[in-house]
Image 1 (tube, protein in one colour):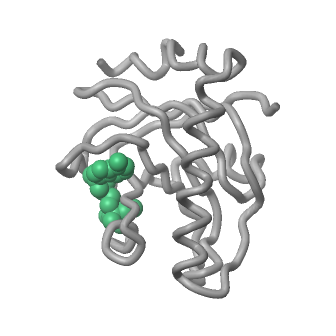
Image 2 (image 1 turned 180 degrees about the vertical axis):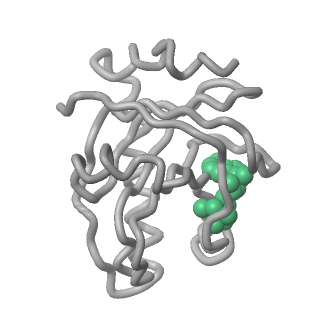
Length: 147
Ligand code: ADP
Ligand code: MG
């Protein structure tokens, strides 16, 4: 188990590649606002709860790091909310409670293997967040602050 940590901000435009290339949208946060807290956490895949100011609270799985597959030069925060929205929510306030760690960042031999692994991460997050040790963070005041 990890010590939960909390970050939030307006959803910004990323590289436009989550949905289009992977079929997995990630609601990016401005990483430069969190350089200190990010440097304290190892790159990899985490899970937790996401609060969207006008919508509610959702399970999420998130990658933090350099996205080796895409050779990024900047660290990014890429939360995938485990919910079907049917529309974008750029600019909305997104609050995250990060409560668990799944795996380190890894490179993948193909896009298919990367996508398969992200879906598996999503299933792990779904299940883990129902466990009593993680479920309670859904009620973190920080997530609801903007609602
Ligand atoms: P970008 O590179 O601009 O982040 P993406 O292809 O990763 O583009 O799509 C992310 C956007 O899709 C988010 O900013 C959000 O507005 C929207 N979106 C819709 N559904 C979801 C979801 N389940 N999880 C995350 N973002 C979502
Ligand atoms: Mg994205």
